[in-house]
Amino acid sequence: MDRIVAASAPRGDVVASIGAAGHRRRRRRLRVAGAVALAAVVVAGAVGLIVGRAADDGPAHAARPPERSALAAQLPAAPAAALDVPRPAALDRTERGTGAWAPVLRATLARTRPSTGAATVSRVGTRTPEGTSNILEVIGRRRDDAGALWVRVRLAVLPNGTTGWIPRAAIGGLTAVHTHLVVNLAERKATLVREGRVVLRAPVGIGAPGATTPTGSFYIRNKLTRFASPTYGPVAFGTSARSADLTDWPAGGFIGIHGTDQPELLPGAVSHGCIRMRNADILRLAKLMPVGTPVTVRA
Amino acid sequence: MRLEDDTPIGDLDLAVIDRDGAVREAAQALHSRGDVLRGGLAAAGAIAAGLLLPRSAEAGELAGGDRSVLAYALSLEYLQDAFYTEAERVGALTGARRTAASVLGGVERAHVRAFQGLLGSGAPARPSFDFRGTTEENDAFLRTAVALEDLSVAAYKAQAPHIKAPAVLQAAVGIHSVEARHAAWMRHLVGVRPAANAFDEAEGRDAVLKTVASTRFIVRKTPRTTRKRSPRFTG
Image (spheres, rainbow over the protein chains, first blue to last red):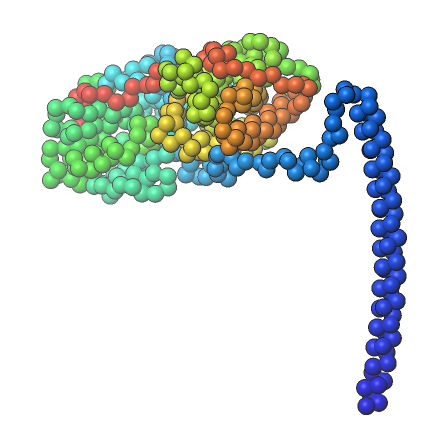
């Protein structure tokens, strides 16, 4: 019990202390409230005087304006926007694309360096032998000493893998592609990758001995359709690769990717250098692979 | 290249960096009135009126319709989206310009998706572009970016009075201020005063269209890459 009393005594002091502090806070609040009220009266009086003078100076019909708070309350809330704008995002790796191509707008000369004084590599025309627009894969750019912009492009010439520099002004707008065709000669297999994912795998026929399929980096130049030639199947893609063996082949000896009327020979080394696919596969490829797609042929 | 604060874009000596003349031609078209803001407007406008809007809109029949305004705005966004996205893909820019192309490209792509979602099947088709090297070099990129952003700001401003629905106006104003921030950022990077005027002029669609068309950023003839023809490949 003593312990209880002993313990309760200080508690009573604390309560008393708290009570005293509470009284002091209340007194302070009262003083602050009084000061605020006084200030409000002064401000209101001043505003009243100003408004009253303004009303006196103004037209006879000028009415006393509503309180500011009332005016603010009359303002409508912001309407919801009609657009649902997604969060901005930078391009990811797949969105950046696998390459870019541009059409040749005017015939020009490809040179060894970005300079009009550099040696000529080849002439670049505006049309392919198939009559389509000549397109070039753009793989670099640089300004020359005079400030003109040049682009480095893959050239559809022998030896395969040749690149050259042409004036940027000779080509048109860039088109990005998001596909990449890889042909593995040893495995006799073609793989199409789109935005980082394999979307097609197919067995292929490749060049026979003496008419080998060239290896290296190329691109799809055009697509030919609705022709009546069972040998090439229903669709044929033209590439920038050329046969190094059949140099006297008509129309330049370009390597194509096309169908066949002898599917039983696939996979195999059976062609004159072209990449043959079963007709069902080439039709699928035609739906998935746009012109301009980079092509890598590996040994 | 650092420029003096008060130097308007149209007065820059483009020959110093533009031996091909492509940037100079585009800039002259954009700034033919000697005003960066109004000049900028012009580039994006040509897309909208010249190629994307239906003929009835060109004739002015839909000029007061919110849908027409939205389609026009989407056309401007297509232009900016394509410009910054191409710059980011090409990867030729360096430093702050590279960062700007990435950030602004993300924003403009978001705007395009938003407008496409709102317009649905009525959205205008995306045109093809040839930016003629302006996405492939630092200085040309910046000058064009300033013009395009100023263009966008003034174009949105001109269409605001024609919008009927508050929700559409709210959306347009929300994008307008974003484009103004872009314009200030690009102006800062190129070295001209970001906020030089006390009042920004608006520019109507017709004037915008005319000027944008003259930049030749919009490609009217796409390359023919497919043909019905028997191949002569090696087989």
